Length: 309
Image 1 (cartoon, one colour):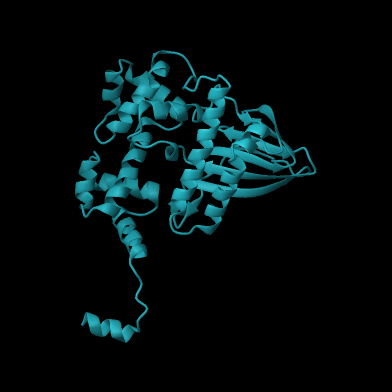
Image 2 (cartoon, helix red, strand yellow):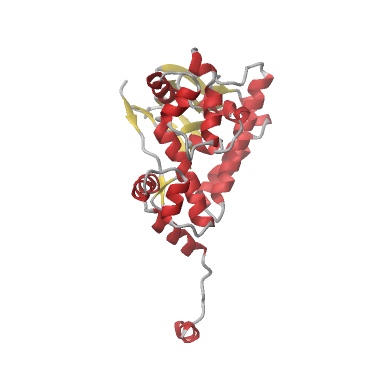
């Protein structure tokens, strides 16, 4: 079945790192098309029974069970019960790791990014219930709906706790928690590569990294995209834009200085990449978010004008 690419949700013109959905699927309305997206997807079944086709392989999902769909995997669902109710949490992979994360931290995440990972996908109801995942899922949905100040932090916290529970469960079952999506020289050292890139994203070059880890450039470029579902350039630019957001909001550095600090070839290149990812130019981003943080003045307009004069 041909799969349709699903675009990420935007909030106020900016791509949302997490999106939460509360859905109902009826037996007479199965998905007509499979779809895929850059997000990692958590699917928690509240009530009913569903079949999920993941890369054309069928999985059964029962009440209170959890399923993880990796980034860019083709999937579709149908309800076996007359009606099934479920929650979906879609999360950008980058919220699972930080740019200065350790190699050990990174290796926990990689199995959930690759479409050829051998990790289990469906997690049983007894584990899900006992670990408190249903409460974390519901809290994430509430955070998403309310969108009060700091809700992004709450969402990320809930998601990280869910993955902490999953990793603990896999470890307890004797599953080796490491990236094992393939074989070959680059696969065996991929966590080291990501660790190096995360720590040197402002200055690293794709050819230089390939040379450092003693693999050919063409093999490096091809395999990196196969594992991460994005090119090396896209991955590095994502890290740079994340750091750019921090610098724009916490420093008074100029756009030119920030672009140089982050390794962009020119300020115009930085502005174009930032606008593509964030939906607005760096200057507009800084101005709009600082305006949101500025305290409002409820005094009559005349009094404010008199004081300013």
